[in-house]
Image 1: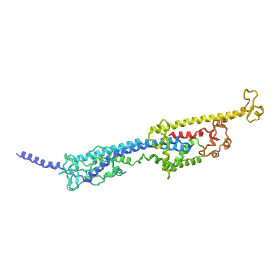
Image 2: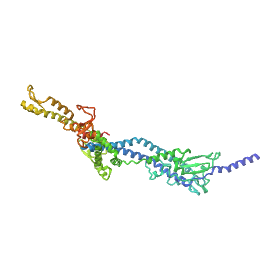
Image 3: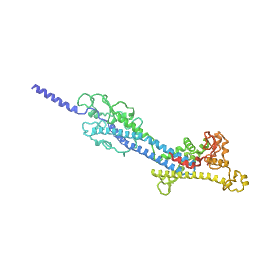
Length: 524
């Protein structure tokens, strides 16, 4: 009997103890906690869209820079003025270089965008899971962990988490007008409360935040400090400290369990959002305007002019380049917009018609058609190059023929011998009055060097090795008279740099400069 009474007593005590173990004995979370989580969730859901938009704008900017470079290349090739062609060709090359620079950084930007989207999705998942856990199977009548009214009532179902985007599929369509101000250099501004541990009648209703002991009814068995809910909630079970303000400075957070993903989401998203914006609609124009006022670009044009063989001192070529930039782009100043619009609206081959049909360069958007337009001008210029070479050769032959014919027309021996450069050969069949042998050889040598009789030789050679005086004979943009260079075939002292004839027919490179400049414009 005594044993029976002892058994009943133990059972009664256990029965009394059970409700106390099962009921909550920790603090619920204030409304600020779950509302800040919900607001943070909204911002996190907008990260994939922001990442996608960043990548899209970069791709579009690269495409527009490349297209405008092709447009300018075609416009350059269509120009009759060598200076205009060289300047426009340099602009095309700069745009192409800018596009290549963006392309080289695109992989790194893609990785950053994907990491930001993935880490943000993981943090969002943590918030969603946490709030689902605390609301999926509760009534809120006697126990719960989320305050509906601080210190008074509790959330009784997930439906009461108004305007909270949890347990929803992610898309690349959601946006946020505050995302840039949310992800600052230090942290996430939507997480900001220093104490979210509720008090009053909500002080001992949450089983989650009980004081830790070894009892099997306790969730935490020892003191611990960690981040929960995707890292949005900072918990210290030793002091029962619960807060969200750590999120404002999450970049400084170290070592706590649960820190890695939210810190990564913040860092990658902030870096992505603070990268310079790419506006495809204005990228090319903005770059050109900046170049128009850049002294480094002037130097680039000078190099182009030297490349195509334009003679002149560095100062002469620099002044010439500046005048071209001023004429074409107004140095990026007040009239830049007008000049740029006129330039990009220059009519070029449309790249698709069987017969040559032109339209505004700005209206051609197909990369294929722009390439075809450039190829058309390349072929056209090669044809012109061939024609000019043939004309030069013909002039040389005509010169020899005309000089010989002067002598051949003379019949009398005395008249022939009295005529300069003529010689009468009585033993010769046919025309007996011919050009003297030494004169003919000299003329052939001169023609090999110049293509015609050279009237500038003494004007140039008198300057010897004085480069400054030599180049002073020339005017930028006009046919060069002299050139400071090494000798060509049949010229004396070929390995020595000195002042030599640089006229149109002497320097075939400059003779074809109008053509060559356009080719240079296409080599970007």
